Length: 149
Image (cartoon, rainbow, N blue to C red; front, side, top):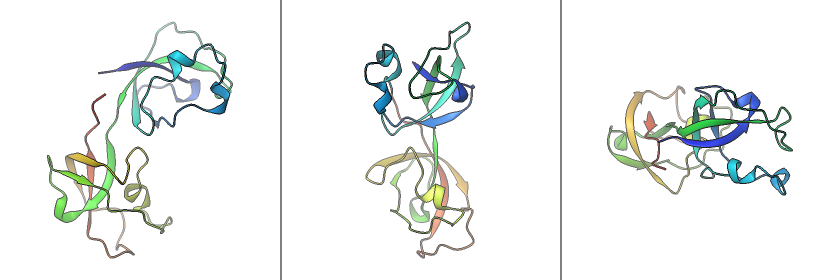
């Protein structure tokens, strides 16, 4: 199910994804805050539609202004323990990784997913992008289901 919100003009393209981080200091006193602050903090979203004939509104946070869009929760790609990597199963992330230069780091610490939550796997993608894990973890790349709103 999609949700109507206001989004920065630069991000407002169907298919673009973002993580909603909540209210910024520039939101204080904004007349559009009730239309803008409608999403769940820390969740990844995908733009499904930009409202036709929508006006671009001035915004203290987004330099180019904001526009009305429809969004829905998006899936998250992540590395999980291979022993738990089955479509339909629930699992959690393995934990933080200090190796930020590793090609798998964005999947070991994906934006839009928390270490203290479990997620249902919608698809097993396969091998992670790294050759070996510097923390000696046996990992598989999966796609987490989009959460229900």
